[in-house]
Amino acid sequence: MRCPRCGEPVSQFAAGCAICGADLEAARAARPERRMPAVSVPRGRLPRDWWMLPVSALLALAFPLAGALLAGFAARQRDLSGERGMRNAFVAVAVAAVAVLLIPSLRFGAARLLYGV
Image (cartoon, rainbow, N blue to C red):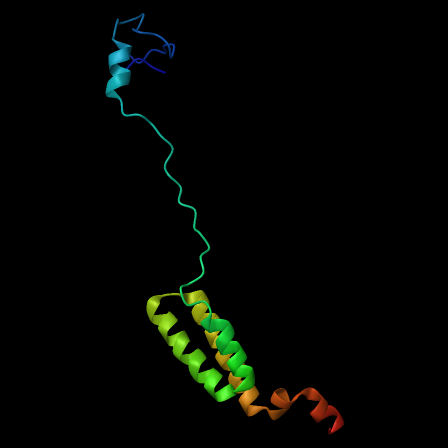
C-alpha cells in the first residue's frame, strides 16, 4: 500500500504515514471496498415444454407427415423465442420425418430393401 498524500510505501497495518503524517485509517475508510465481480454461471435448464422433442421424434417415425408438421411448428416457435439449440433439434427431427416420408425403405425397414421380404 502507498500513502495517498505522498505516495511512499507504508505497511498495511500502519495508522499513519511516517513521512508526511497522513491519516491512513481515514483514507482506508473513505476508499471503496474492492470486491471480486460476481460471476454468473449459466444453468443448464430444460425448456418448459421439453417433452415436445421426443414426442415429435416418435411421431416422425410412426407418422412422418404429422411428425414433420409438429416439428416444423415447434422449430418456428423456438426461432421466434430465440432458443437456437432447440430450434436446431426440431429442424433435425423435421428433416428426418421428411426422409422417412419420402424413402419408404426407411419406414418399413432396410430388410425389405435388401432381402425383398
